[in-house]
Length: 109
Image 1 (cartoon, rainbow, N blue to C red):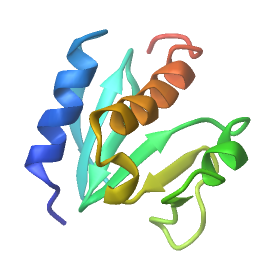
Image 2: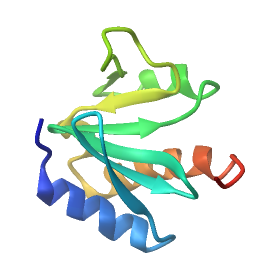
Image 3: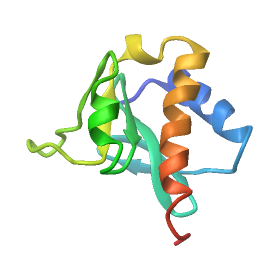
């Protein structure tokens, strides 16, 4: 599965303001790794955000967010966000900050 390169560039630019992520092919798309942990990524047109188990339900209550069910079963701690949910820079940045907040709480790999 391909991913939207324009959106990937938008993510790179936002992450570059605060860290130096590494990119990894994952889930048929691209994942942005921070301190060795997946922070966010893209699968097709969907943004994937790692929010952690504690923030999972709150993230799902946001418009255009849904459970990440890549394997056919929901993956707790990860959400998909449809394109309308990250259309603006502010919205995309807000989702990325959620992912950063979670991975920064983990010990570096």
